[in-house]
Image (cartoon, rainbow, N blue to C red; front, side, top):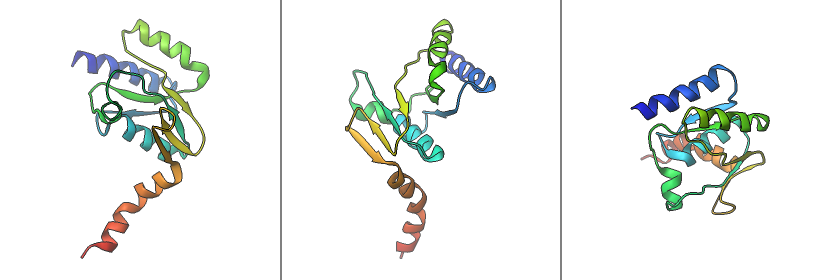
Length: 132
């Protein structure tokens, strides 16, 4: 709980001081769900690199508590990284936004944003249309 509070306080401060463009809690769906939600909401693609010792599917779908995905202006990355280090909050710059795809580790995962958005918006109507 201490880690959750420390990390949450750090993120809340970034939001309250308008340093974050967007933020997603990763405890519901993991990194890939958060990244996809943010990309769909902002209608902008992203390219990230996941570097850890875990299998990629674990890194992408882990719902570990006290983890957040944030998007910030490139000009503020270094200052935010330094503040996180001083606050004992683990942080990593994992990618950039832009384009029309959501990609992870090059082409290990590559999702066309328009198809992702359509799948997100249309699944329920399609399901109901096919219900018997």
